[in-house]
Length: 207
View 1 (cartoon, rainbow, N blue to C red):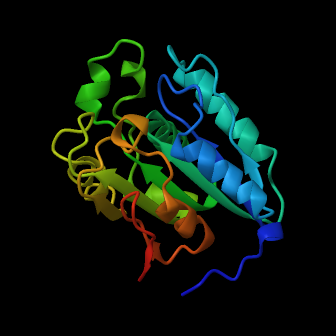
View 2: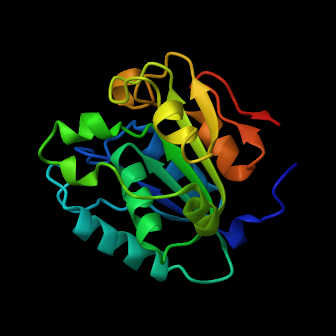
């Protein structure tokens, strides 16, 4: 099934993770550029204090960004790493809504708890029902060997939260250190929600 939305009717919000200063070459920057080139509205903000983030500040920014884009466009949110936990906290508190959400490579609660700078982001009290209410579609994507999520994101997040999940073999944390880098499959999903997300060398496959 192919999305019937046109570029003029889509709005994308791309959110980065901890210690991410939106470097050149990162797949999120490339995704933003590709979507803009196709005529979509795209917001890819630098979140405050990315090396020592305050969850309350990040939540306030998220709400402001979503509030600023209330119109008839299809709203798509793409989160990587710590931004996934940001989205989960926001959903748990209520008041956020998107048409589609992509959650990429969330770190586990135990890993987050081991770093003072981001420990407050761990363990959002969110439910599967809240996620269903917050977005028409929520997809989880993670490597099967992510060092920041021992045991796998599907076990920590996908199964407990009843999330549609794509597992990328050898994907690591799906960041620059893991070679991501251009990632055509995510762009394919942004343009067509039926696409299954694959590794960086493959395009998405329609389901």
